[in-house]
Length: 111
Image 1: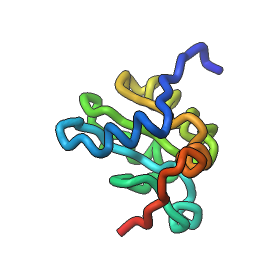
Image 2: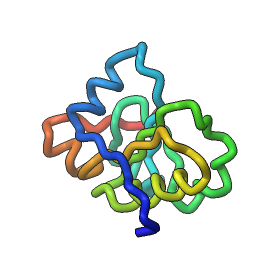
Image 3: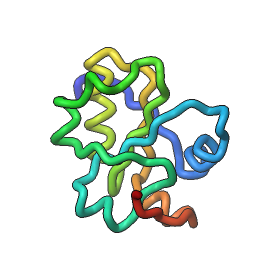
Image 4: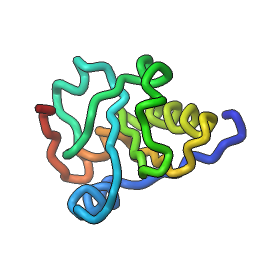
């Protein structure tokens, strides 16, 4: 789509990045709030996909942004949108939350 390559990481890589306090990153869950209420990855913040265009100015282009959703499809759309806005340090969690849980990692509740 759009001729852009979306960089992907797997659940194990994300878990390592999240645990490393020296690794500056933001994990953004683009699912609906009702979905996020069932659990997400550690340090994730909610920013539903439909809200992203209105909030893009709040994101820092120098930060590493990891986008997640249920299966990886919506977060891939978010990555492509951010790349179109000039963000280059954007990653999609391959398999989304389904891949995260299937890899044996727990889902955390926000707040």
